[in-house]
Image 1: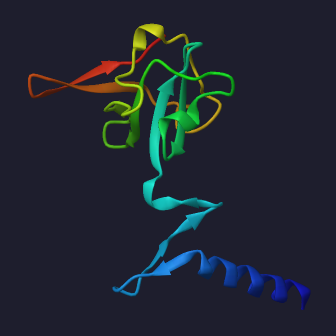
Image 2 (image 1 turned 90 degrees about the vertical axis):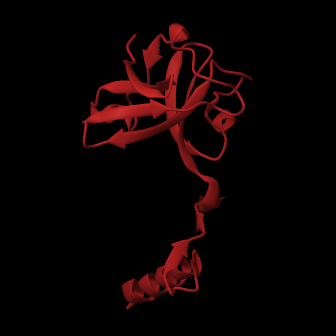
Image 3 (image 1 turned 30 degrees about the vertical axis):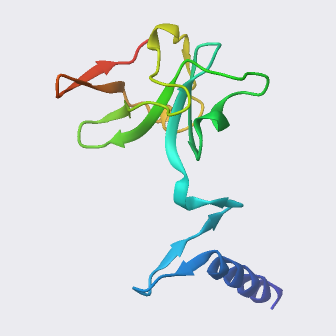
Length: 135
């Protein structure tokens, strides 16, 4: 009976995390205290040269404690069709990533721990160019 009561309480809290839209679908509104609307898959290159990944609102949330800046950043996605971890774009706060400062890739957490090769997508004269990201 205690188990069922706990499940009912948990279920009620889960439903309260979702916002009912006009099309009667429930869309997540908050996850662990964050609004999910602006959370994106982002990366940065820290001042010690580490490539860090995360699901954050702002690139500065990925910066380690004690540091105030980084060597740029952007966004990431997993391209299952091509079998790669694809980095693209630029950080609005810190600019394009400077891969010349890259010393280490943090492979302890997804997406880097999945073992995919990492590529950075650039636009050159209107064409997509994929550059491998290596140390």
